[in-house]
Image (cartoon, rainbow, N blue to C red; front, side):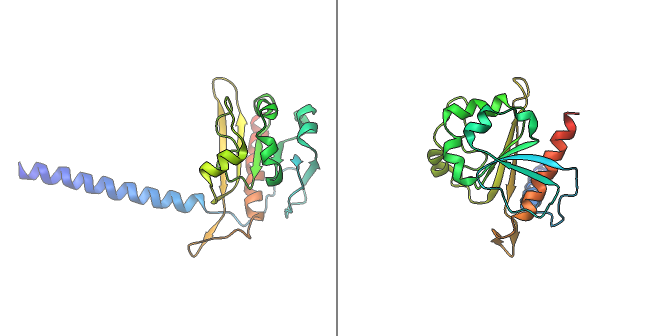
Length: 191
């Protein structure tokens, strides 16, 4: 009987150690940002706000307002960036339906609301309410793509890199490069 108890305790210890190792490995991976620039195909990205400063030359940004985006043909763009200064307006219920209707990935830059500026697209709250509740300071960019009624949403988070246990908010160019890789992957899925 004692042998059986020892095996159970050993299995629990092994399971605990493996879970801890997986957690530590995943924590390291989510904060890793490649330093290599995006080298893929040229991309067309709509930007609500001021276009970001990136190192890639094959990225074509087109600045427009939320209203212009709402009324535009999203097929002209491979993705949409909504910059931090426009997140509050982007949570307006008038625009929330747009995230479902336009078949393009949306990326929210500088959002403190963690994944997207408003978690519940069916009953959105203001960006300020969601940001106050979440106050996620680890992620620089979060994104979403509505893939239909059955599949729902795909989502992405791009965290600031961590070096020597400190969040590195200065190195955002690498984060943009990672976003461009995701956009290219989504573009390739649709062809």
